[in-house]
Amino acid sequence: MGLDEGGRPGGSWTWPAGLTDGPSRTLLASGELSWCYAYLDLRATSAGPPETAAERFGAGPAGGEGLFVLGEALYPADGEDIAVLLDGASGAVYLACPDESGALRRDLLASSPHALIALAVVVEAVTLVATGAYEREEGDEVAPYGPATVDAAVRLGLRELREADPDLWQHTDGRPAHWETALRIRALAWGAEPRAAAGAPYTVGPDLVEDLADLAGGGIVRRFLPDELPDRLVHAPTRQLLTEVGLPVSRRGPLTVAAEGPLVTMAEAFPDAFVDDGQGGDDGDEESTARPYQGEYLALGGWTYDLEAALDGATGRIELPDWHDEDRPAPYLHRDLATLLHVLWTFERLRSERRRSTGLSAPSPWAVFRPRDLLDSVAEPVLRALDPQAWATEDQFWPTRAEDCHMGELIE
Image (cartoon, rainbow, N blue to C red; front, side, top):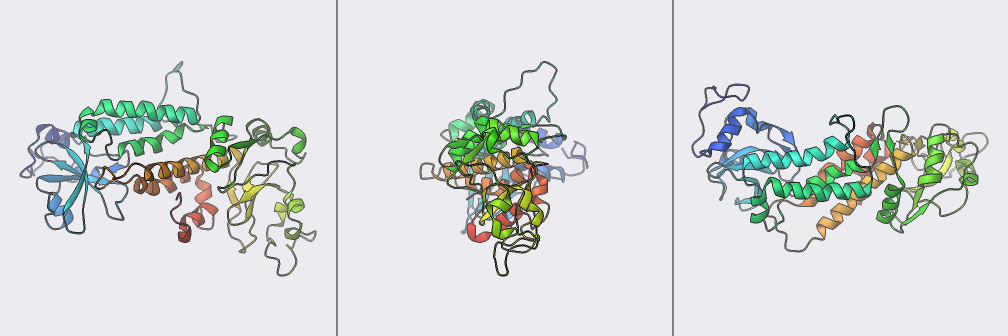
């Protein structure tokens, strides 16, 4: 049987020798294995007969006999591409890449292509429902957003993954590669409820800020009293967030907030950086600014690189000053305080998951997969999606932080 140009039966090519598993051939012929989901890209199967492992890796790697390339993982293993391989006889699916000696390292990914599809559906479904991409029927109950729902989504998802491929869990002693980490990343979409374009893009609840405070150290949340907020703070959603939801008083992390005292303007908090003529500080003062308008903003809290998160009391926009390098970083940090908190919470959750996975019992049960490789690869696109404008130019804070190699990986 061959495939036509659309991946359907009837084309001119024939099945490669060794690809004898009937269900696998049926799925390949129908094009149902040509997709990019759950951090796996299998679109290579739409281009013609699958390559052999020997063709993909250049010279038949030891242990690669009878294996065919379905695609690749969207993250590396120690900088090397990871292939998704199909055992042509049994239908088992693997993550694989050769080691330095040329031998093929493999981790079982699914017991069959049908199971592979079912596993990917579980991971994708978590995000589709949380982001509203799945159109719900009127009257459908929707779980409340927040860290507790994230954790519940992980627990439910793990149960559904086991049900989707029980043989996989049995043959990997309950610790298969890839799926749990992929699920934990996707479940973060339940952290804050997305809103319509008008107004705040996210609804951030007190539980998210409490969890952020625990993740960032200290576990203390400060909720401001109305008389601690100046009259110039007229942006109603920000006033409500500060008084009812609060900010984390952390010992580490990008944002550090004072435990007490009223919010004051940037000019009041940093008089040397803002002078009456609007030209910045005294000659040679490293905290002078070319953004004198920020003097009227509110000093929200300390930020990475000895900067300060400045809050526009009229619009709720969060900016950074350029105290150490003219015009850098770019002023825009985040659209509003809710977005900033959602981004910081997601950032800290990814860091926490990286630390958790790195601390798992040794030795590792995997020959190829490392959770930190997947986490490091997706951290930037996950954060970018929450506020694309924060990544609009290389001079924004987050791209600068991502490229700051001496500080390690973005979420290290």
